[in-house]
Image (cartoon, rainbow, N blue to C red; front, top):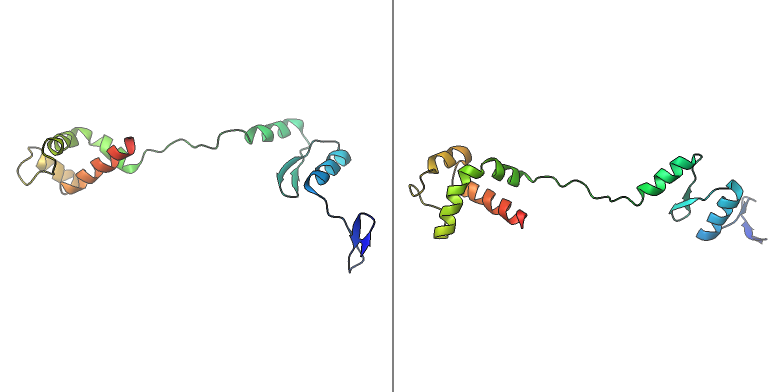
Length: 130
């Protein structure tokens, strides 16, 4: 049942629904502060002005995180010297070397197990740098 600027509920309680701006004005007047809207119908009010300013400042900081080095790039950098002859071979011939064509083949296979694995590491690492 409507009553004044609100309603009387079935449990005989009074409820008033506020618009977002109307609620902010009410909080500001009653508490004597500048409430900070954080969501629909939700406001933050701080006792300490310094905390208020810290919160306001935090909302304008960049949320970007420090970029992480991808594992393939890290592995590429770790073995760059070993992978350079393979990269040169692929650049010159347009294919992965066959058995016995690359001088460092034994070292590369000892570290990676085959020539295809380091090739994929090279592709992933060099594609991510662009």
